[in-house]
Length: 129
Image (cartoon, rainbow, N blue to C red; front, side, top):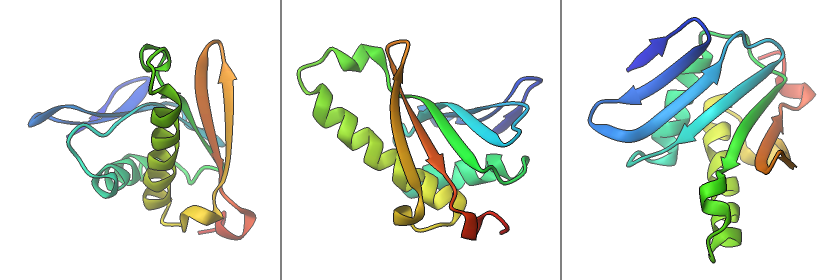
């Protein structure tokens, strides 16, 4: 189910309360994904749901996943392995959403105010599609 609110676009599933994707509006040149939670859905299904949300916006030059590794996970003993898994998952989801090979996306990880942010840049050769 897609929810179009004044300040965000959201995808959720009543059958899976843990599945949730949220994009900030307006989108502009950088698409901000503030929530990217797969729940019980596969990475492919999550990527397709993100693609559906992105149909309501212009193709972005960059996508920012604002909290790819939530703080409540960061303190756990398996935090580094979980961060690596989340980064790989986010890359695969973005690849499906954009219809691009994962290796074509330039990925940059930053820590801002205690949160890990992942910025994916669409290469020039794919910006016109």
